[in-house]
Amino acid sequence: MSDTQTNQSWGGRFTESTDAFVAAFTASVGFDQRMYRQDIAGSIAHARMLARIGVLSSEDCVRIVQGLEAIRAEIERGEFVWSLELEDVHMNIEARLTERIGDAGKRLHTGRSRNDQVATDIRLYLRDAIDAIQVELRRLLGGLVDLALQEAETIMPGFTHLQVAQPVTFGHHLLAWFEMLKRDDARLVDCRGRVNFMPLGAAALAGTSYPLDRDYTAQLLDFAAPCANSLDAVSDRDFAIEFTAAAAILMTHLSRMAEELVLWSSAQFDFIDLPDRFCTGSSIMPQKKNPDVPELVRGKTGRVNGHLIALLTLMKSQPLAYNKDNQEDKEPLFDTIDTVLGCLRAFADMIPALRAKRDKMLESARRGFATATDLADYLVRKGVPFRDAHEVVGKAVRLGIETNRDLAEMSLAELQGFSPLIKDDVFAVLSLEGSVAARDVLGGTAPNRVRAAATRARNWLMELNAG
Ligand code: ARG
Image (cartoon, rainbow, N blue to C red; front, side):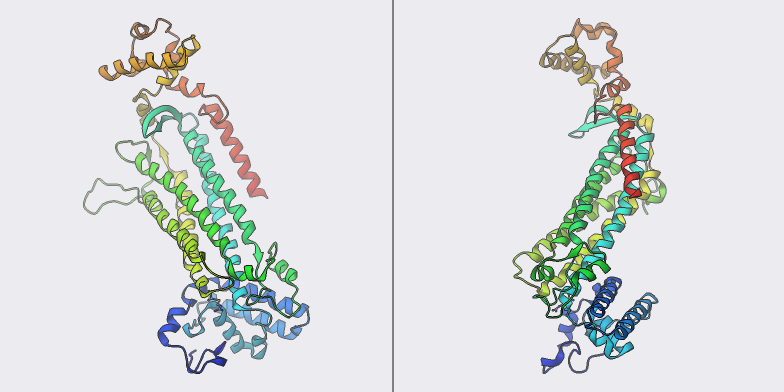
């Protein structure tokens, strides 16, 4: 296919053909051809609606539908020849349709513009993408819940300021990740609801003089309803911004998880073992096993954040209605989708294969005076005001630092030197197991609370997957 004079779709008023560089510069077919399925689905629905209202004969409608289905098959077999002169996915498919079925193909574009067509295609594409992302996200959520149940009693140090703070259970830590990602899931559900409105019928910007049955087209395409205002329908890309914002938050969560996985798999922490298949070696240092997958996920967060800024900037100051600027929505959006899908898939595969080094975690929790708060709480229960108890325990910790011992490793007599109220029941309190078991409050780290939370999480997931 080539263009000797002017573009056949809009060349009527032109006296010279497009500059070759400009044609390449303005074309989007290189990246929007991935919406071919949505473009064809939208055209089929539009043709059926035109036939229903009598604007298109039923013979033409049948030819159009069959022609479009044949084109879809051509594309999927890799036989379709995409042409730069035809600018975008829409005109490529329409030109091929006319080539295959003649004049009926030229009737398809009645009561429609590429402006409402492209806005519809993106919404359909994004809707499918959100569904695919949610499958992977929920697979990851399921993996976290299973691992949390397995590790409900595993003790590790909990950190604030990356300093040992109080002992927690590894299951509890995993369920913190679960909660973060569960909110991401809710954001995607919410966003999908606003994506799911249909621009078709807005035509170029003002609506159309044909008596379109927009509700019928929307129903065929499974949209909640047609967009209410034609100018808005062809113009705004807030749904893409909103999705990318949700994706950026999701990536931020994955990046935080990634950072912890990287730290934990270092020799200095040594809390976990990532399976070899998710790591790579070094060509120079034979001992290395690098946590590439989490590192890359952490790094890819940057590009999604960048896409969010790109889309916000793209829309800023655009006058109504459609502007060619909007063609620039696709690459950031598509790359966001690809990136999020890839990262989720990698994590969903990797998390269930992660091995917790329980004794290393326990050993680490024993250092850093993780149960100092428990000793203070113990004194409070004996009537000491918390601020005084804090002071007493601070002194005990100082002795521990000087003599390189944990509080639990001191003798009763030594501890009583700090407060005579301390009795030999203190050792149950100073034990790591006692400390986590004592956090027996809703949302707390006690193993029974972790198991209950994991069970609730699992039920929530099962309900989601059922309906
Ligand atoms: N390729 C264009 C885009 O992605 C399709 C819409 C073009 N409409 C127009 N009036 N030039 O936005």
